[in-house]
Length: 329
Image (cartoon, rainbow, N blue to C red; front, side):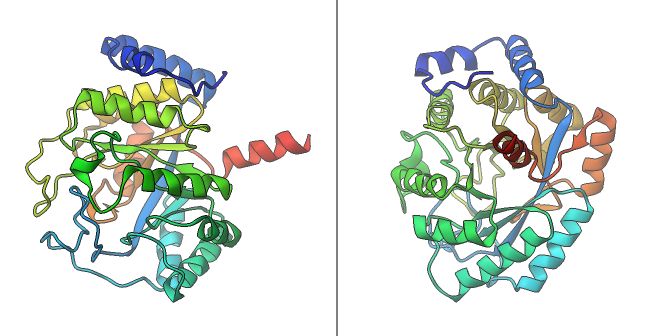
């Protein structure tokens, strides 16, 4: 299927506002044409450095300025990360994402240790994804050389709403980091969060930004806000399931070749609600008891869901292997 990167905002709005059953049917049809419909990538996310972040992201319990009860921890040891990676792999994960509560990457001994973590986990046969904040092209290159497969850097919300959620960096800062990641030939993981108090217009604008990038993000996480006590968004209501399904289905239609990740917020979804998200085009989840610092279903619960729904875990480096075959044949 031909990938389109020149979607107009009116086209995005028309898709997003399609009656829900028709929207799901269209997204599911595209998903069946482009992907193994029953294959879902299992990813694990660990916090390699927790809390103490100087940013003011309104949703984040790791911001130092908020009293959320999160205990700050310094950067993990390489051995500890390897232990966690081994557990994740044994439980079916094909990707390990390592997150650090930093505003930006600094060229110091901590970054050197992260590069060692990346190398060691890559040698275990897992796709390595990092989310470390803003970084330069040179730092992205170092991650790539160490064996990093992907870099996550979400745009969070629309450019118009961004300043209402975060003031310590700009939307353009986000885009600059994504450009550095793409230039270094790392797989780009970039999505956003719903439930921040944004409007439907903001949601559509965010999807428009993602789907009109020169190259679509390889992975698009769709997160539902987990409202944490002590953050400015602690009183925000749970995101309704129809909103999540609409976001996932629209993302699938706009970016048919991207992996659409059903990310934060799954802990509050029933199996039936998650099934609707898979039907609408989601083909990745984060597994394990925590997503950085917020609750998430455990591996056993997810494996039972996979069995019930007839889903199979996706192997690591699958698309990369396809690209290699295409260029060598």
